[in-house]
Each structure stands twice: as structure tokens, then as C-alpha cells.
Length: 261
Image (cartoon, rainbow, N blue to C red):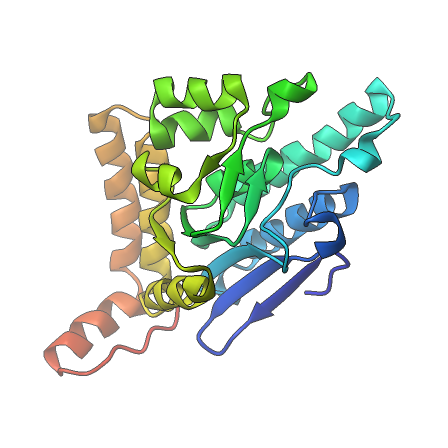
């Protein structure tokens, strides 16, 4: 995958690292980056076997500072709406991506940048990371699923405080509130994220994708309906070669070799 504002590297371990690469703008989301993030995640929807786990991070200087407000200066209402339609496509491509995505937040994740992190399956943060949904201080409101994903992560009351004040908070606070899974020293962030990503990537790909799908759908359903969906997802794993390989490897006391089929 070749992009102007992103770098995408997929290793032999089948872990893909997607780096937002506009360090001169603190990795702010201009229209081109929005389009490329959309296309990147849509690509993994079309070819989920291209990688077994993804990591989303930012180039040196921070994770993502949100939308590029310099580009937005002087935008007409119609141009703003057209650009936001691209954001909506980007959010849906991120949400629909069947491959697990870990956000590696290595600095400021503000506004749309924080919403990108929240859209991932879970978040690891550097100790220096800072978060904020600043939209209400700029005359708008979160529009990249922040009002949906944040309450699911930290609860409604905490989410209202974060969104309605627009105030920044630390990685330690994000950890205490349940928004991030782990906080590590800055120099150890990628090592920690890649260790977890490789563990995920070593598992049966179909099983991982089906489990992710069942979790995502289940939180939107009542328990009985969620369990019914889980069973539908479960039975799709029974007919795979990987299911047979997993059982054989266990009984033969060896490491399984999964093929994603």
C-alpha cells in the first residue's frame, strides 16, 4: 500500500503498522489523510488476510492532533460538509475493519485524533500521551463517533465531563477511567504494542475475526440476541482447517501453523 500521508508496513509476523505521517502538522487530518485512512482500512475489509493484526500510530511528534484547522480556514458550509462525508466513510471503514486494530498513542491525541484511537479495538498509551475532545471549544462537537465510543469506554457521566468541557487529560487518567488498556514508558510503547499484536497475529485468523465481530455486535444487543450472534460466529470457525490444526497441534504438543482458512 502506497500513500502520501501514511506509511503501511506489514512484517513477516503478519502485523501491520499504519503510521500517520504528517509530523510537520502534528499528524493532523487533512482531506488527503482522511481519504487514505478510509482507503487503507477498506482495503483490509476487502482482503482481511493481508494482515492478522494492525497497529495505528503517529509519526514523531504525536499521535494525531485532529482535523487540520489550517486547511479548514475559510471553508464554506458545503465544502465542510463534503469533507465531513469523507470522515464518515473513514469512521465506518475503521469500525468495519475485520482485522483487530491496536492504537499506539505516542503523544497528543486530540479531537479527531482521540476519536481515531477510540475507534480502534483497544489502546496502549505512552506516559507522555495526552487526550482531549476539544470540539465544543471550537463551535462544533465530536463527529467521528466520539459521542458513541467514549461513553462505552468510560461511562456516560465521565464522557459528558470530557466532551462538554473539552479539557485535556493525561494517559494516567485515561488508564484510571478505563479508556486505555496499558500505559508504558514512552521508549517502550511500540515494543509493548507489537508484543501484544504478535500474540493476536499468532492465533487462528478466522477465529480472531469472528470473536471480534461477536464482541462488537454483542454490546449492541440484549444478552440472548448477543449469544445467538455469538453462536452464528462460532459455527463459522468449526468448518475451518485452522480448527483442525489447532486441535492437532495441541495433542501433538507443537505450535500450530494457521493458514486463515
